[in-house]
Figure 1 (cartoon, helix red, strand yellow):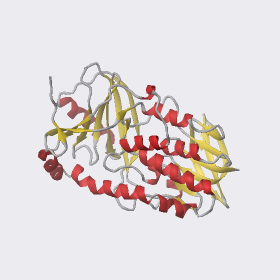
Figure 2: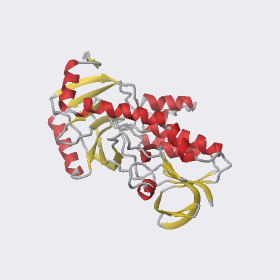
Figure 3: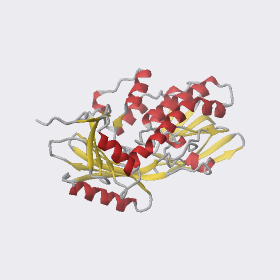
Figure 4: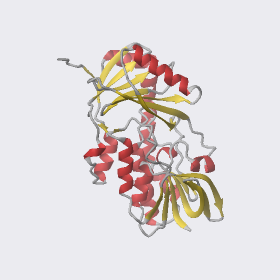
Length: 348
């Protein structure tokens, strides 16, 4: 019998695992393996940097990649407008970042890598988990189960399926790129998606990605690539393709933190920015909050967790309020045409 079972070791699960008191018997089940990367632009936001600073965590330099880009090229295909805006992201290797956070987890936590949880059942005062590691099935019991497994969370699907979640398909491809003109872009096109798409340079690669409605997501991605080509951006040999589900928060009541020993954290709880799809900061923050409550061991974890994540939900509400100015083509046109907060490029 484990005290705590954590499903997923992204930033939420890794932070939670690292901060839990060593008095608990903890198992962490993570499906990542070296052959699969995270479908993510791999940019560390200022909010995520701040949380790392609060933890006094310094990143090894091999996590960062070239180039470090200080502006985003916003491409509005709907209105045929391009503008540059200053940004303070750190360009990084997302897989190495996740591995680094996992390396900080103490040895008291049992980690099951390349494992997929296929079933969770409530059994009296505990939870029975069935998961597979390299094709071998295993069953364990835990008093608490925590879903830190993203938009497709098995914990959320099993225990909170009535809390509707808007899932999109994130797809990105990596290409060889020898042109010495690196940039990061944010692309809006209503025909392709009512979310947004992106391109980014990483070392000698050029990444094209986006978040698309699940229906016809592959067709939409191909349309994106065609429009990028037609805009004069050339990309070369395909190296790899990545995909996953991503959560798009569209409502004020979309977050779900859990109760009665089955809790959610990070993107599984709906804690991801609806405007930028940035989730690392919310994941680490919610993991920290949940670990602090469990470590005090005074009961009523669900209520306390819900209350203490109020600050995160308020932040998300402001992000939702920002969405019309990003995704409504007419409002976006007004903002971009005005030049508010845009910067001018001085080309030599």
